Amino acid sequence: MVAAQLGVWQNFEGGGGVATYFHGAFERLFKGSGMKDDLIKLKKKYPGYEVW
Image (cartoon, rainbow, N blue to C red; front, side):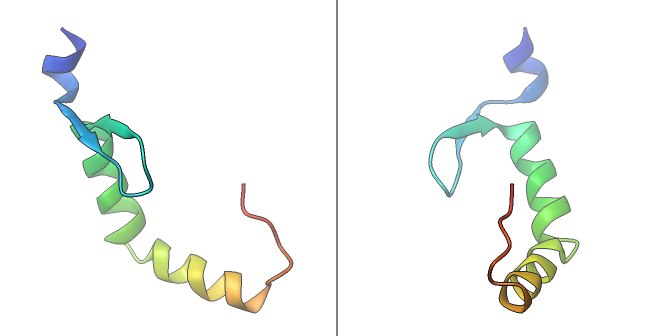
């Protein structure tokens, strides 16, 4: 029942897998909104910081 609601299992680019619903949400929020680019810029600006 849960699989029908959340979609099939997809491989995640960093390894592992995730339901299609969450994969799509991540793609839209992290990559589509510019968060990924912002994170890369901040990581370069503050190389000693750790991301959790």
